[in-house]
Image 1: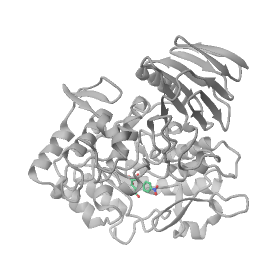
Image 2 (image 1 turned 180 degrees about the horizontal axis):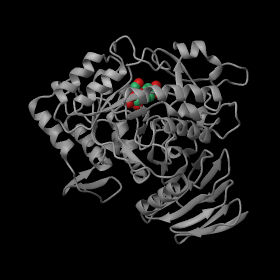
Image 3 (image 1 turned 135 degrees about the vertical axis):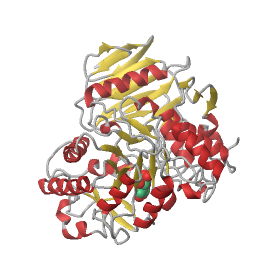
Image 4 (image 1 turned 120 degrees about the horizontal axis):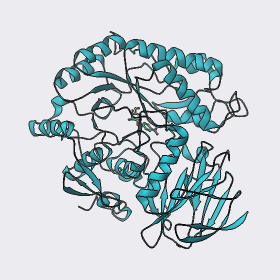
Length: 499
Ligand code: 9PG
């Protein structure tokens, strides 16, 4: 129906699916397409990426280059190209900057892949499965995003386990881990305030084949035991819903994978020197496989699991059961939860973020950090590894803090093998304080003594954080401004971050 919406003192001409109702902070609009005419012109647009790694943040509507990860284009919308998207689009929630400091927020409240688009005159909402209402509000940014998060939590649930301080192997050793390296890392960490020692990618012979590889001759249970003896809880990385073209699983059980209409398995990404594929998690035989894998992992004694590349279970594809794709993803994660139990901490990585609410204890809310600020070869691609990209997207997802723990990815104290300068490192550690989630990959024996003291202080700190502006905080009374790290004008120039 055509109508005029009264929201937060604005009167907005709109086309909506039925009668709106009022709720705290704004309006609920019934399921169905939404089209709103706004008076703000070419203002700032808040864009939310579908997955952990997808670019998320405020962006001028006039700015052309906004690249998402390649997999997001066919996944989120068949029509969007991966570069120079017009109009700007967003997953689940979008917002526009008003001239008086308030924002206009439109957010989907369900799992049907809600999508927002905006240009200088309109903001529209569309879902693949139009089953849930929308929240629309005009008001203070922090209050409105918090209200939207509450509405999501009411519908999808909430987890409130704490991970504690995490050491993870990825950002120092990458895929080159061995049993010996992890054991040595544990030895030098003894007595430090880490809670979790998490073994990342590289322990398995191949992505898809979840058993100990040749560099882990004592097996994964023995390693978990060693980590526990060191005084830490053992954590493990898996990408349980994908398999590399090189894996035994893909070779032997190809019928478990998502296929296109012609029967060809769908490539959902390239990594580890080969394409990789996604399991059809709606097949009973796949469920049996997932139950097997996690039964084994639990028996090994890992109680913190970093589950990666999880978007694969939610890609657009024909499935053996015709379930909405984000629901298929949630059901598959629920199978994992039913096997590992409530006491296992599940960290979602590469997850569809909004549909992870209520399932994961913690969620990676940005792309990978790296021991460099950003990669000039792909400066406009905010989904790529790089400290700048991680700060940018994670900082724009703080409003999700009541839904799950926010993992902004690791910080660095080392100077060894590190191109980050002190300012860059400080942005990461301050981001971790703001998110209240502390992780690093620095092997303790790589640190100079002042660096290990700084790490110890970071791990033991309980800073008081107050947000005073979109990018401004006080941390234990110290003013912290992330704007220089965010400002798009400073990022793509032919020089590094202006300090
Ligand atoms: C292990 C890593 C680490 C890291 C994760 C994830 O698009 N990509 O090809 C892509 C590759 C790797 C990646 C993210 C995206 O990193 O975020 O912490 O666990 O896997 O392989």
